[in-house]
Image 1 (tube, each protein chain N blue to C red):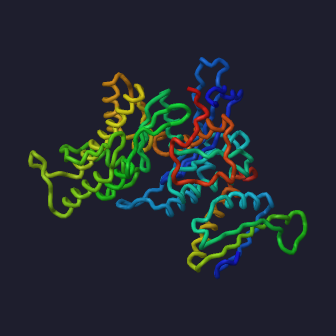
Image 2: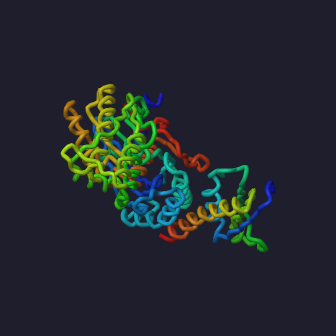
Image 3: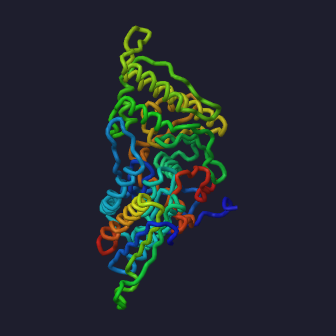
Length: 98
Length: 369
């Protein structure tokens, strides 16, 4: 994960672990276009500092590693754009919203 | 051999949501299929279109649509369109059996944006995901709407130009473009002339062509079963640029060649080429029917020329209007549901979109002829 000099780690909290898992599954399948210059590793983790059941597995963690700042910016933007679609669907199209 | 198997007979109606976003149209459709009658001699009842909503990304005159901006358009509208489609259909997620989406061919970024929405919806609603080949969507929707049972298919759009016939569980490509698609040729000529892209460049060319009076001779590039478009485009672009730079061309009657004449000449030439290769495919296959699908398929002059050829052969042309011809979600829902009914599913790991996805790669499990 530290092949290159430019890194970023994002933690995205969701309301439930189900939502975090859906985001993970929706974004994970797509391969990176330039894997030698940019890698993106996603995982789902518990909310930090808490151990109650509600917080379990509701954080989506995205770690990026890029060959340059430009590649990092473009790659992270791509991730955020995809995440935006997922969040939009979860917000407006899930059972409780309809 | 799957062809020997009985198709599974589902005994209740099924419903699919379909998401299309392979080019500049974002489409969401909801379709219902009714069960196959117990007696095999009875035809299946027609599918019911419950919603068919489209939003097109339209660029200013002279500009094409770029993948990045098109993807942004789709991301901005996909949630709203799905919501609107559900509202139109009066259904809830519980009524839906599967979520289908265009997996290719098409532009990478727009395809991927819509695939992300399809995956999310499929997981949220706990419905299986079905990846659909865009061309198969066009063909199956055309057959469903027109009732053409075993036609030679001319698939003409901004990204594809293929002459197709069905044989042994595949839609086989008899001829195709060797370079750019026929719709791409029209779109790009519209850009040269700075014709508006609203509602579509092809439609505006069709309107201008109706006013054309003089035919300008253009290269005619049929190569066996295939056609080539790029040379024609370069040639007519050259003529148009000559005219713009103050070197008018004159017709035989001494009148100046106009934009309308150029649109007319371009249509006549490339449609004549399409009619020629379609006729040759009909002769090979022994079919009397031609089905025209794809965005260029709603051009009435193309339908008219194809109709003349088909009638000369004792056959008929089948075409649909813009609701089903131009890219739409309902055709993806329809083709997805046909595949779903045969047990086809797309796992998340296999749901990656592919820009190149040929029509004949798809196994047509739902046809038994």
